[in-house]
Length: 102
Image (cartoon, rainbow, N blue to C red; front, side, top):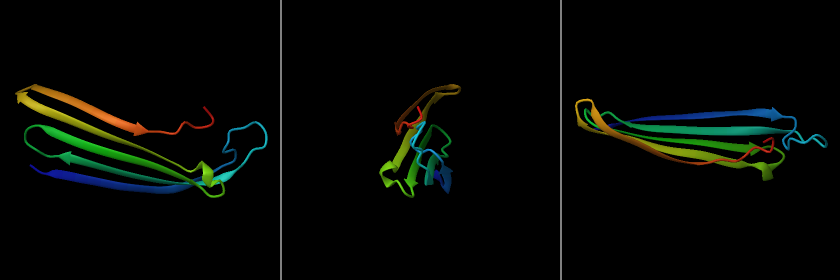
């Protein structure tokens, strides 16, 4: 069997007028985002396997101490036993940053 690979890259930015989510002494900044995504899928006649990775990098123009990188990886699989009978499972891991506004 073989695999199909689906990569993607999203790059952009946004302006945040209050990066620390405070009521006073607000600090603004421009945040640049880089979001790579990659999926690897099997295209087998029986069974299936998929691996997905997602990245979320945030870079602050003036406040680089606020830079952070988040990401996730997930694997899914299916083992075909007989017609309409199979075992399936998935597992994942993620690293996230809690926003100050929470």
